[in-house]
Image (cartoon, rainbow, N blue to C red; front, side):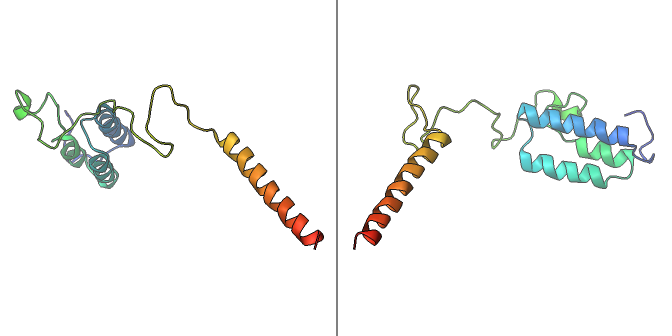
Length: 126
């Protein structure tokens, strides 16, 4: 940044840094917990220099000296489309459809109606 590091941080500066952090989060280069921590640091930053320290060690930055040939840490896993996994309705298969909430509500209504009907028959036919 060309500004004096001791200059007060403006809302435009904060928005610029927030947008850069958001871009890194969306591309998978930044974990959600790290994003939140850096966002808190942006909110607390009072000067442009403090904002620069928030973005200084972002992965994949071209303006860093050590960025050329840098490899991501071992625990870094970029976002990938995960294969379907088993859920509450059994194994996930391409042709299997989930039961909608409307259908579940109708089943619940029928079961409860049968329960009330059974209670009424027992109660009134004693």
